[in-house]
Length: 626
Image (cartoon, rainbow, N blue to C red; front, side):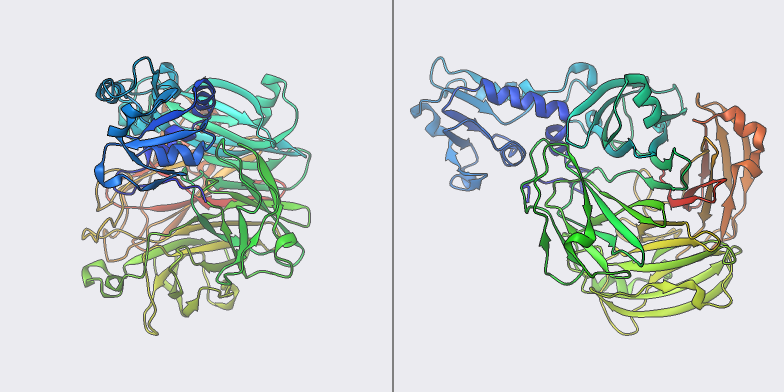
């Protein structure tokens, strides 16, 4: 496992990780290492050496590591036992390397300690170019590293299209642009370029077909690295990613943006069902190779991981057929990916009867344990944590639910299923039990004869005991009855729409809790694929009787073309079709990069966005907000 800290919830993220993981930083550190004259004296004034050595272990040797914190002397940092900085003058280093950015003050500190004539360098030699920085005065500002990855493919009759908006403008950002690098399956750089974003809240798209044509590229399956320059408010690039057939096929799927932080483990990967092939797209997120055996698959709860024998090069992509490593494992069993912090949230692809669908797994938390306080939440928080999901028209769609353990300490899941129609009226309920970590329970909503279109919610139910940590997740699968096309999505629970708070719940898109407002992005679609959404008004406790939701149609320049109101009953839901709301002519004026902003100042809505096409394909995944 890579010995890196990838996320710090108190600070909003580990900036040093993102600074070191940037592809340009990787190239610069390789040049820096090549210029060092051994023996190297590595001075670690800010505790960054462990991350540096984990991601870039090939420091020219021999080397010695020095610290000024007396309590750290003798501690193991990477392969070294830390030595006191006072020992530096008696050594004979060829180079002193300061493991810090903005390191002038550290260099001044050791000027009298380094042997005369010894070159002193720092990680400032590996800074990104000034033109790529949002805050040039402070390098390790999180807004300098508003980055993300996307699975990206234009091969085998399949294409991808990434869609988002310049939401940073709403936080006061000035001119924005993207720095982009496209990697092929071997991790080679296919192309690097920049793209200006529209001024204001304009929409934009990155289409694999257009990029391939623009640069004359061969067919590819790999990943796209995105770096937003000039960001304000958010340091993650959020997007919707659509994958679709270009050869007349019927495949269609959409996924939410990648979680920008590598994890030791991921969960929510389904085992193949009858006639299905499940491929995990393993994509190295770093310049350090993934050694053979460093990544493994395990049936959730079995604790018998099977190591993947293949190594994976820097920024490379590998298709892993899960059945080849876990033969005989079948739906509704689920798989745990032990990724060793080498990858951000991976995608998986399910193929059945010539149709494919793509979805993502989720971060499995290692920092959580069951919290008895959740079972004793005060009445003001009502039903507490809710995990809402759409129930599409039962006459057309079959809906299945697979609860997924999403923390390493989750040994059981005490769950209940509550169903509601679109008006928020109760439409069914079932206690699912105290599910074991290795359970294989997939709930088929066809078992509810009075099922109506609307939504469902998973909630904690402690009637048989069990533990809860608030990180409740599940995989939701929808299947068309007429042609078998399927879509699936997975997400986690939150406390919704209470004015009372508990720790960081109800969460807000920005600022402290309680989160009682909404900004959701819905792309319109293009090329015969049109977008829709299911917008849910979940309420842990009674709140405003009806939402005061506004839906605003924007074009690619961010101009608001039309607006419609929507009043969703508390505990209810609404199906949103922009073509019906605004009309085909207005949507055509908005264009292929237009979008709908779903805004509510007084309710926290939860949404799922989808696509439909004339061939009977459809896609559905949870929306992103900002």
